[in-house]
Image (tube, rainbow, N blue to C red):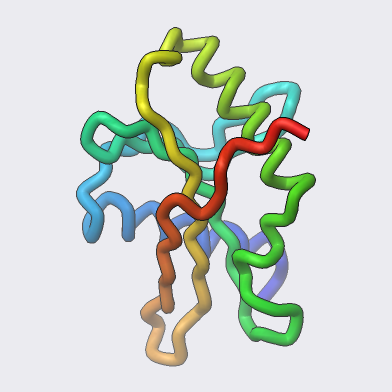
Length: 123
């Protein structure tokens, strides 16, 4: 599967998962600013959740979540901080999740949701 198509497939699968399985209210998808992008921003009750989606077809390069290394975590943290500032949401509790997606043989994606996958990275 082409990389862009694979990424889109994973994000759509993750979006359906957080809406239907988790019952989150999705605020936005692919939130972008000059600092970067966050795949999904959603409300889990009163908690604001910043979700990074990683999709892989094989485990050859490790688990999808392993691709969310320190540099990526710092970037997500900076984008999330800008989002909080833009919408004056500093008082809201927040967390950072990762959703791993694998295309399934039966057409259904395999999904693993890692809540509290990392803490905000400053340096």
